[in-house]
Image 1: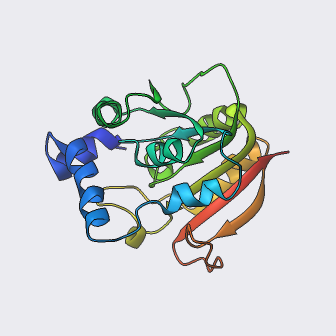
Image 2: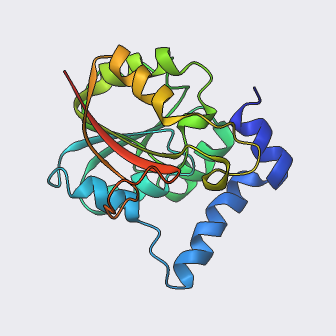
Length: 198
């Protein structure tokens, strides 16, 4: 399976990370809400809570949460994406590493994985064990589980596969929605799930 950086370079060119961030800048300039994930997370815990943005990319979600007063840390396997995150929000602590390898030495009130992180994880069971180990509160994850809800080149990971990895890691499903603004779950190809350690 191709890695996220390989797929991103193929579809977006060598400067894919800046292009990725610029796309969201453009949407925001057009008046679209690009902070749905951060708004969702902020509804779960009060400002000041600790949040790990796992698979943070260019830091869009982490940066917004920091603006809202949260203690945010970001981690990603893609050094080009992290370079953009560091340029835009140098005050945030950013870590390079995959989900199964990161060892930040602490737990967080929320671990959030937004922006289709899961389809690009090559070792999902191991990754979710490690994610669970960093979760002192809840794990929040949103991703597409069919081709229509994924970027080009992304592999399809069935929601049942994610649920199995979570269960094996000792995570129990608390709630599930079809969107970040809490539309009822309809199994329509996208899911936002909240898990808690058993």
